Amino acid sequence: MVRLTISPRSSENLYGLLVQKELALRKSKQGTLHRYGPKRKDAEKWGHTSKRGWIRFQRCLGQVVVATIQARDETEEWQLLNSFIGFLDRHFRASIATILMSYDAPES
Image (tube, rainbow, N blue to C red; front, side, top):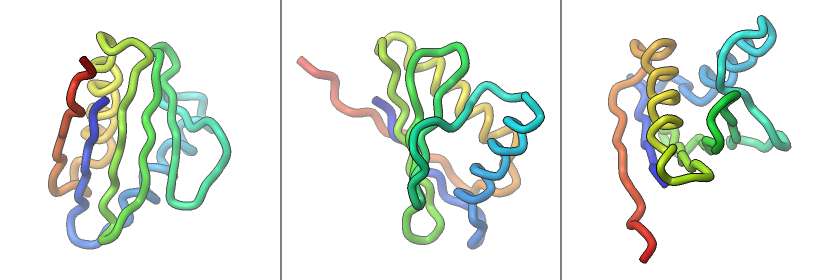
């Protein structure tokens, strides 16, 4: 499992921008990352159309977004990570100050 901590520039609502962009892409039948599961306040769960796994993210204090990326098969986790970081870079490069990546300890 990989965790991303995404800090926005100034006080932009990065979480709101992510949700709006996914909705716009879904309405125009574009994009590979789509929301699924029940709606919850300040939390989303996205899946990829062809990769097996999910991305959960939530809004935290200071408009920071924390995302958890988890694949069903650990060897495919990098593909989901690559897809999500590419999505962030393509659509929100001007809105993001930093992205911090951390790994969970491997299970023995």
